[in-house]
Image (cartoon, rainbow, N blue to C red; front, side, top):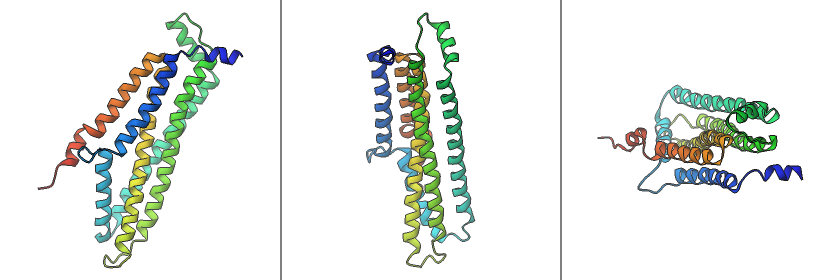
Length: 232
């Protein structure tokens, strides 16, 4: 009964702000991965360049350059996966000991916030970070699949297996990149979820800010303008 009393301290605005965060995360992800043909996202534009990469890869000899690029991509996923593990550990440490947060709250508010409320709010942060970690791990593995398929592409461009295998490698590369971007968005929204510690209004503002940052980088950034330029 005491648990329900503590949960009741979260107002409808709190729950609405949390729901808005989850909805924004889902909607912006869908918009990025399924944009209209007239306004492609950076993710979609780079996916086409990944497919072009594998077409060129068939004719490149030697292929050391390609293996170095793939190794670099896998290193990036490993870095972010490790970062997520550290962040998750920090959040879980706070869940187990909310005294630091209680001290900060006491300085800015006269209200006593139960430990369970802090844990619920930190749980949302941990949820996004865990999702991001799983996406990064899966990305690393799919890049590994891509490496194996690339290694199976015959050296002879005229071999009937060369182009189909390269196309398979391209699609694996694209899927890995999609999951990598999902992991990054998870980290962005984990940062937004942290604002809930300051209240529902702060969470709403942080959510709108993160959505704007993610949207602008995918649909209104300088890199996107560069990718849209046609070669003369």
